[in-house]
Structures are given as C-alpha cells and as structure tokens.
Amino acid sequence: MSENIYAIYGEVPELIEKKCDDLIAQYLNEPKNEFNFIRFNLYETDLNQIIEETLTMPFLSDKKVVLVQNAFVFTGERPPKDAQVDNEALIKFLEQYESETLLIFEVQNAKLDERKKVVKTLKKFANLKKVEQMSEEDMKQWIKRTLNEDYKDIKEDALNLLIELTGINFNIIKRELEKLKLFLGDRTTINKIDVQEIVNRSLEQNVFLLTDLIQKGKKREAINLVRDLIALKEEPIKLLALITSNYRLYYQSKILNNKGYSSNQIAKTVNAHPYRVKLALQQARYYQLNQLLNIIDNCAEADYNLKSSYMERLLILELFILSL
Image (cartoon, rainbow, N blue to C red; front, side, top):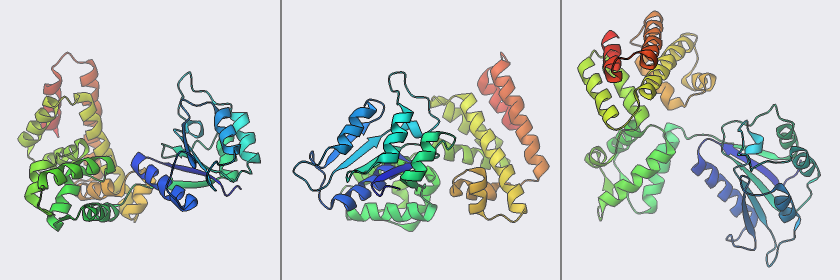
C-alpha cells in the first residue's frame, strides 16, 4: 500500500471536499498555491496527463498534491463518451506508485464498485476514506460552530425546528443558514420565529408531514398540502414515489424494530439515514404490519392509475389519500 494515495468517497460533495481539504492541509503544512496543488477533473482530463503530473517533482515547494475529482472509474457510473479511462493502465499505475506526491481521488458516490478489478487494486494499494453523512447531533454541532464563526448563535427550539424543516441534508441546511444569517442583520441570535419565517420545508420533510397528516386522519389538510406541492411544480408521480418510499421504510423499520434492531442498525440494514429511520419509527408505531402492507398495495395501484388512467392526476392523488 502506498501512503500517498487516497480515495475519498461519499454522498455529500461538501463533506468530501472538506475531508480532502483537511488531508491536503495536513500534508502540505502550508497554504495551497499553483506550485504545490494541482486539480484535475477525470471527466475532462486524460489519465496520462494525471500520471505525468504525479511523477513530476514539485517546483518552488517541498511537497505537492494532485487531486482528481469525479473519479467515476471506481464506481458503476456510465461515463460520458469522451471521458474514457484505460483501466489496465490505471491498475498498473496504482500498483507501481512510488511518488512523494500526494494523490487523492475524489469519488462522488456512496459505494465503490467492488466488482471492478481497478477497485480491488485501489483497495489494495490506496487508503480508502468513506465520508459518512452527519448524524442529527453532528449536524446540530456543525450548525452551532458555523454560526459561532460569524459571532452568531441559535436557540435550541429554533435549532430543532430547523432540523425538522430541512431533515439531515447538508446542502439544504447550508443554504438555509445563509438565508438566516442575512435575515438576522445585526442581531446575533436566531430564534424560532426567524426559522418559521425564513426556512422552507424540504420536499422530503413535506412528504413526512403528509404521511403524518394521513395517520392523524387529517385528510383535508393532507390534500391541501399535495395541492400546494403540485402548485410548486412537483410532479404527482414523484410525490407518490416519495410517499411509497416512506411507507415502505415504515414497514421495514417496524419489522426490524420488532426483531430488536436499534435505530442505527435499522439504518444500516435498509441503507437510510438514521434521522429518516427515527421519523419512520415514530410513524410506524401507529400501524400494524398488515395495515402498512395494504397502504403499500394502494400506492402501487395509485402508481398504475397515474401512469395509465386518463383521469386528472391531482384527482388520482386525492382519491388515493382519501382511501388510506
């Protein structure tokens, strides 16, 4: 294994970028510049150019880093026609790598395609670092640190509401925080009213709210929410797919919970974020397993109607909600 080859992979680009920046800063021990840091995009750059750069001695610097972004070759992604990589050449390069240059592959994917020979070689000769999504507590701490850097703070009830509206979605939370900081102006503390006025509920959280309204028998409110989402240009088929995904998660979570699985174990088993599993378990306790199966069947029937019926799509969704 080479100490100077890393593959950083995960689902959240910003967290991957942060992990790479930390690794680069630790290695260089000085600010990045045009002499000690070279960035490539594998979609646009020939492999030979990357290889040549890693073997070239640093100029006006003691150390050098080569970062290769969008390293699709290690995933199951089908690359663009003009972005082909010679896998055998890459395998040979990894096996023989002895350069002092730090080489980092940035992979925007939750998994590497371990069926590929090039991935098996990568695992043997490189350091693999998976960047996990933040837990609910990690996200809250990150929000507080980010605000503190700008000499601002957030009240606990406001923080909880922010998480409730956005879910554990790093990109959404980062965007909403910027809006909140602009809204605050000279004030230093975000309160619950600020969050209520500024932060939009994410689509995923709207769907959780929708299923919560259905469970509580508030069908009219649920239908109004669906109408609002369609007015915001959300597609009925997409909405139904998200609703189906939620009920399927409720069903899976309830089964595994009955078997004694913890929420974290459930999250790993069903490949869902622990925060989604937390919400799913809260909902699932109000249902029997056969009820959830019936709802999933209704979802399948509604999906068929959406794709084959001449009936107006909003009406199909409204009738579906009334049937639950």
